[in-house]
Structures are given as structure tokens and as C-alpha cells.
Length: 99
Image 1 (spheres, one colour):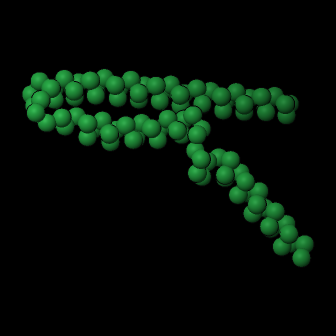
Image 2 (image 1 turned 60 degrees about the vertical axis):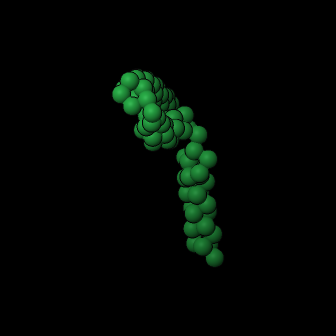
Image 3 (image 1 turned 120 degrees about the vertical axis):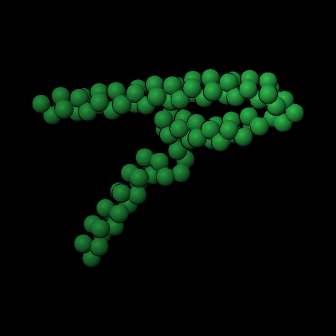
């Protein structure tokens, strides 16, 4: 029974990861479409000043952060860091308890 629960938990985590990846690709697609629209508007109505770079930069930073989180590339304060820190605190607690 316990093995079934573990497999079910793995399945749920995998399902959640797939949903997050789908969400990222939807975010990426909307970014591309909106940026193409902004480029068109910019070049048609004010080609002297390329203002579309500013929203592209701002939204691009947000998209980058979203991608890093979804694909589990968090070099600072990621899930591994959390687990290591929790283990460190638990080990300290055990050590303090036995002293």
C-alpha cells in the first residue's frame, strides 16, 4: 500500500511539472505574439523611436524567471538548497539535544 502511495505521489508531482511546462510555453507564445504586435505598431506609427524594446525587455525578464523556475534551474535558494538547509538544521537540533 505504501508503494502505491509513493507511486501516486510521483505521478502527481510529474503531472504538476507537465502543467507548469505547458504554462510556460503558453506564456512564451503570448510573449511572441504580443511582441510582434508591438513591433508592427511601433514601426507603422512611430518608426523614428523604437519603444517596443522596453516592454520586450521587461516582459522578457519575467519570462526568463518563469522559465528558470519551471525547468528547475534555480542556482540560488532552489529546492536542493531548501532540503540541504532543513537537513542541516535537523542535524544541529539532534547534536544540541545530545549535548
